[in-house]
Length: 236
Image (cartoon, rainbow, N blue to C red):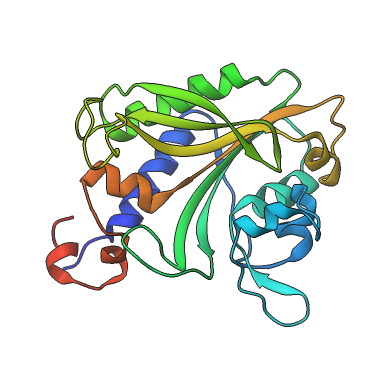
């Protein structure tokens, strides 16, 4: 009598798109160690980048994962390239909730490692994914950015699907919307996962499921996904 939650529908759609492009779906634990959540990702204990994440710390050196990047490390430890995976799952951050922030939300991260993987491969795959997810051709641009686990790093923006680039409140009058953080996997990350960075290279990316769903369905408040409001859920 019921139906799937909108986030479940979005997750399945994302998995379907990437699986048709040859990606496997990988999963990992929600309770992690500092090694997998930070250290192996080139974020040592004294690194200022740790301030980017508000972490729920547990006992015995454990924590609730702040991103699904630990899945990438665990996967590379057990398998030799070529690797093509996405890692969807729940993440947790200790921050104030508002229309665009929650303490519990979903991410999907991706990883591709081989001998000759480039940023051009990432751009082509990303454009194909975004076009199929939004079911229309979208404008895509890549901007330089910084993440400790990638070098070089970049942000992926799409032309605003609300005003079509003219400028509106959704895109803050810029005509662009940030949707994905990405970059070429840092050599230290490959090394920490047991791979030789002189032999292998790749790209990694991450996006918020709620963010993508909000843009696709024009939802203004992330808290609606977790409200249990039947009038909201009944629309999907």
